[in-house]
Amino acid sequence: MFIKQLSETLINQIAAGEVIERPASAVKELVENAIDAGATRIEIATAGGGKSLLRVTDNGSGMEPADLNLAIRRHCTSKIATTLDDIRTLGFRGEALPSIGSVAKLTITSRRQGSDSGSQVSVTGGKTTAARPAPANPGTVVEVRDIFFATPARLKFLKTERAEAGAITEIVKRMAIAFPHVRFVLSGSDRTTLDLPATGEDHLARMAQVLGAEFRDNAIEIDAMREDVGLTGFVGLPTFHRGNSGHQYAFVNGRPVQDKLILSAIRGAYAERMPSGRYPVAVLSITLDPALVDVNVHPAKADVRFRDPGLVRGLIVGAIREALHREGDRANTTGASGMMQAFRPGFSASPAYRPPTPAPWSPAASPSRPLQAPFGFGERAQQDFDGLTMPAACTDDAISETVHVSEDRQRHRLGAARAQVHENYIVAQTENGLVIVDQHAAHERLVYEALRQALNDKRLASQVLLIPEIVDLPEEECDRLMLHAEELDRLGLAVERFGPGAVAVRETPAMLGEVDASSLIRDLADEVAEWGTAGALRGKLEYVAATMACHGSVRSGRRLRPDEMNALLRQMEATPGSGTCNHGRPTFIELKLSDIERLFGRT
Image (cartoon, rainbow, N blue to C red; front, side):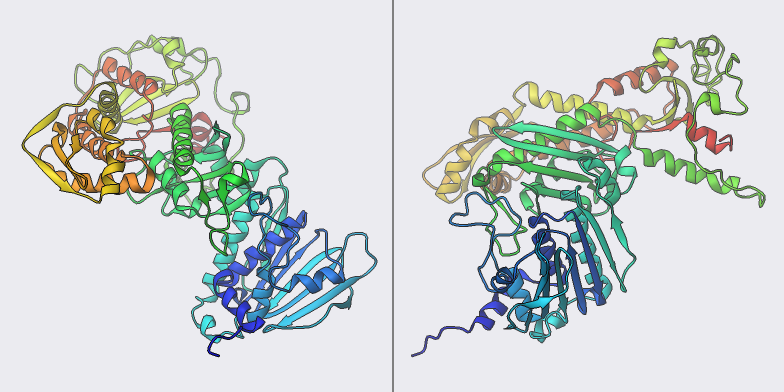
């Protein structure tokens, strides 16, 4: 016979190639087991980037000796019984422990809650020992030493100890965000201890532990529902971004995932609001009936498949855009922080000067500000200040006019214009600080939004091709594309079926000018096949609109009259997305009075 039954050890080693790709994969599996066991405290210790040692200690339910003997056997699990349609736990395959044991030295010590004694079982390169009595606290300790010693080829492909330690840290952070009621402690000889205390139901507090305290001040809450699919979480302001997508966290029914559809939807939601090469910060949690999502796509369980991907993508894009429309135009706190840091070298020139320690600001706490003086900056007495002639930064007579601003105007979010600096930056005064506006960037966004609105209000102008262009496509792609023919027609692209395997392009959007119709149609067909939408054409049109807006907006260097500056501020307040320009740069920076007080050392 040529066909043989593989040994159990070899089967487990093959499985380990998919389940356990690196030390971080083992940590993920072990932490998931601890959470499934009801742990509220999980400690992870590592050495050598996890290559030498991984130890996961939890205070979960623990296991009896009989459970330990089964736990190290393949496809033995307590989490599912007869179906994969109702998976509500993180683990369910029963492959992790035997896979780890087949390529490493694995020891599991456990004691059931309420039991008088513990037990221990070992697996070394696939060779197992029966459970034996051992001292143990309630819960489970899983220790993995010399990972991949039994498969040296896999060991050679691991990265440096620092890189592997970093991957473990990222896994722990993702699990910590998903389960804020659990305390996580990550320590070891190869790292600085990371201690994340439990925050209970305060998910934003846990996110601040992982993403930094500034995320709390620059986050917008998401809470949406569509056809029994729920979406909650927080996303960062468009001006609060990072250099890679590593600060985007997604969870499906509590399971951390790295799903391309979700990441693509986040990117699409921030389109035209994010600078090129920058990425938004987001933490999103999707909840839906387990039967509507397949988590059994890959042994590592990082990928999922939705039964209705278009619904999920539309929910994410729509919810984020609605949140940005609602709150996305406020200035991020890092702009003010950066501005204050830029000022600090001037203050530190004196050896005797020490930067003041930040403290909560209030008018009553200020030691040197006369609250009732007529020249107060943000108090109710501001109306006296309004009656004065205000000098402008420009010498132009039009700019040097008397500025009369009512108290009501100052209560606007962006305040009242006070000056124009270097013929590009508008300085506006608010009730509790000041705002600096980039006039070109701000007006560029206003013009762009007006053009986008025009795209939605009527059919776009098109240019008729003298000779229709015939584009050959597979029949199924033609079928899918023609389902969106009406939508494409509203955008100025007229297409019709031309036999079973081709479409005829008769009109193209005039805004695009001369266009490669064949390439455009093929791109649209690919997008429809991937996402079920035909948004690529709209994206091209919006890109053209952005270019037109850039050339049609108020240019840097143009002097504005006070009424023009104030009109620009009011338009910004009324226009969604005005907090960033079309290229994703901020259009204004806000300084609170507390920031200004610190700059002058008054607090």
